[in-house]
Length: 486
Image (cartoon, rainbow, N blue to C red; front, top):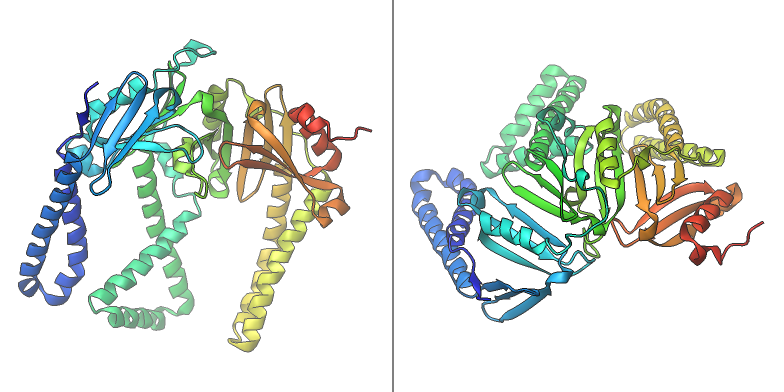
């Protein structure tokens, strides 16, 4: 097989990216000096950046070659130090495509080829044409054409209508985005020398409206800006979402507005699914479906939720339907065994302790720094106590577990409720943890260890007998040999 070149149009994309970064960096300088004084430096700098970007990409293009043979994929690259990397085709499990807006304009994509192993090395090819990328994806994932299952289950499993994108702002990220926009406003005002004017305007507004009205107005502004920003981010990520099962035993997710992505998950790597219900989304009757699969993150990295998500926030009934189509059975709708009442008491005590700690901090600051904080402290105690108890009771009602012929199902959480179904064959071990307080209450936390997803999925505050029986039955003789049965 001959060695192939990357697409030379990457020079145009890189040069345009350098120019865009230069323009963003030049804005404060141009505003501060004025266009009449700054334009020679700005224009000259942009020309140099464009030339540098094109030159760097030209050298990289001339020094990079790849080829796909019958048994391996090879990549040669490097400017100072030359690298020659290979991946055996039988080990390839991940072939994902992505394209940022600049690449899409000229019809280019990035191809990431990996083994699907935790921390496994991979190859990245950029830029190649969209047609070449799709051909590589199809050819390199064609090795596993034989699989068990019903072939009629292939095809489109889910799409996301535009209306469902409205669930995006129902997240704790929304107020953070609003606060972040306020910080950006202050920084921009400092760049252009208007920070004092901005703070003076805010002070005048406080005198005109009163401090309480100003706080309410600021809260409303943060909510509106955060909602718009969260909606924009959600639309960018999940526009034209499409989940489908391909005949070669691969789940494929395609999505994105400006930056498009195509993510493939081999069903051989699938160890279950996770139904995630953050509080805001759950109150709206929606949920998200994540894949529990190997190779979705590297050691030391946070779980890449957007890469493992099979279905973004959608009506809960639709999320359960998609999970059933993926697993082949309505596992997440199994009747869950409740946990002992001692678990309820633990959650109530945690909630009350959090309220007491917060109120004590406010009270101390009120006595030492600012007296009005004493009023905030007693208001927080009155309002926070019933909220903490309600959240604790909701968290207790969420606790539950079940064992089916193939899956272990566990649910917990209130602010972020998760219901996970783990394939028993993918569980490599069980961890039993008991604190001093749990031992007194006859409880333990059981964690199913797996090489997929987050690596461990807890079943918190389950009764000792029920938890050990569950581990013994699900883990077989590996766990059973350590149990003493009454």
